[in-house]
Amino acid sequence: QTYRIATIPGDGIGVDVTAEAVAVLDAVVPGIEWTEFDWSCENYLRTGAMMPADAPEQLAGCDAILLGAVGFPGVPDHVSLWGLLIPLRRAFGQYVNLRPVRLLPGTESALRDRTAEDLDILIVRENSEGEYSAIGGMHNPGRPDEFVLQESVFTRVGCERIIRYAFERAAERGGRLCSATKSNGLLHSMPYWDSVFERIAKEYPQVSTREMHVDALAAEIVLHPDRLDVIVGSNLFGDILSDLAAAVTGGLGLAPSGNINPDRTVPSMFEAVHGSAPDIAGQGIANPVAQILAGAMLLDHLGEHAAATAVDRAVCDVLRDGQIRTPDLGGTATTAELGGAIARRAVAL
Ligand code: NAI
Ligand code: MG
Image (cartoon, rainbow, N blue to C red; front, side):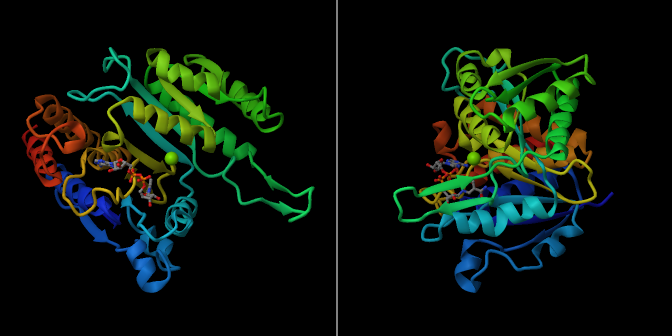
């Protein structure tokens, strides 16, 4: 089978790390047809738009999308976010944001004395509704009784599908699922979320469940990550918890993510968690591992499980070996040197 994969390298280090991920995927799955789109903040400065209005149509025929990162000094972040990332996630109904958080070999956790067995968490974040809503606004501007309203939207369909997805993943993995809630403070949305969670839990007797207030769960990630396996959270809670969890492992250079529509009739989109890193852009020293692992998630999503495993093992082998490390991991290697070593290792497996 030939896959058609779109790349949107974007800005800054997104361009460098995407090139390495493409080379690694080519090494394990021959014959991928790549199409590159130069949609980015530079494109915005040139044309006034991050991407053309028909961008979703241009991408619709591909099997998956590999996105670098967008963001550029001088272009406000809401332009790149609402001009590219969010419209693409919504155009393709990518309602799952999947963020595996692991301690990789040869890297150090910010938590002392934690091993790879302790730190292996899958965060399932709702990616289409919830707290990130455009509904609301300013009332009585300039008056003493001025206030803003910011609405959250929790639909039955939206809650059921993300929670069911999380139960499916938990059933495949360790059989443990923790739901992030805050039903003591949020009197409408979170009790509803909890009721959907408890109803769907009855369909999965093999999965043991916990419901934790998100503040306590944040502390649990730091203090007892070994007690956690799969976590499901709303858009806002999942966003915050996944950055926290990535930070307690080896850092941003290692953390991949997927924006997934599980029904596979439309493309899903895979990206590193990190941004375009203007502070190190153009120096060729960004760590390509996060983007290469995003590529492995992409292969897994396409059903290329053996190739995905090979990429994953190649990353682990090269990191464990420790000879070739980018500066964020304490070494002096370039992006291309680390990416090249992983590609060669993946071919050899
Ligand atoms: P960032 O993730 O780009 O950088 C944060 C820090 O981590 C920097 O010191 C950077 O050098 C370091 N870092 C990040 N990735 C690295 C890698 N692969 N190797 C080595 N070091 C790495 O976050 P920041 O600085 O907050 O945002 C920069 C720009 O990226 C902004 O315009 C922001 O909007 C955008 N951004 C885009 C995202 C996306 O496209 N999905 C996600 C996050 C931020
Ligand atoms: Mg975030």
